[in-house]
Length: 371
Image 1 (cartoon, helix red, strand yellow):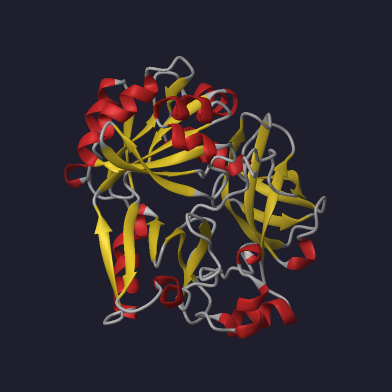
Image 2 (cartoon, one colour):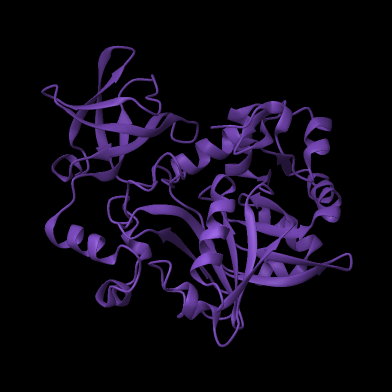
């Protein structure tokens, strides 16, 4: 639940958002821009065709350092991802899981020497950091970093950012490096949550506005709000925590098993491994799928999913209109028997059954610089 407006937190870019004419809304306890005068549709297209600048400073950043040895070894006991196999400056997407395999949060972990840099979701960050600190008490130190985080996304992101910080050009997808901008340390990661090439830039809070303004001064960059961020990640088939994944879903059910290497499944040495392995061996009750409704009406979160014979089989977890796709799209959970691509289903929208079909994801091809 969002916090009351009078106690909402703000990011270091808040005054700039207001100056740029943003419509502000409560999100994860923060007052955040949902759109700018350009509008959600044009902001979406801007990011797909040129470059868009997002404020993601509400997310949590922290450095994990082992008291003795490698932080990756300790952290790997809390997540199903392959963390100890990370090379220097490489990052990995994974999930914090509980003993039932439920997802406490999804996050990014980057290796620098024997330390890890963690980025977690805004709504979960306090609980995440408390969980990690408690699990690793006496063996590691978790330093919560008070830094701003910007995301520059789109096919022209490399051209724009490398003109300011040349080190950006040499990175490939899921690689990060510490560099310098105007005498201050910045952490540049080639990643994002739009399906496009791009970067996230961690910078000192008092330098964030200056960097944002320097990026926005480029003719090919526009500020982008939460509205377009959501439509972009949905077209890319990416989960939003608290909607598409939560403590009632496992990595297997959420179609995230690609992020769990075979050695981790074989060793069964992460929280909930027995549950996940049993699901992979014996089948699951539900599975995350892409959905393409017929017509133009979008199916929003909470929409009932039915078989063509009228049996309730699931619920939409994210849905809306895809500007690049040119029509409505959604994600949700259905039994595996209905999960194959092109399976016909129906969605109950405003009390009426609307034809739809299961679709492969991503809905729009991803454009990462793999190298």
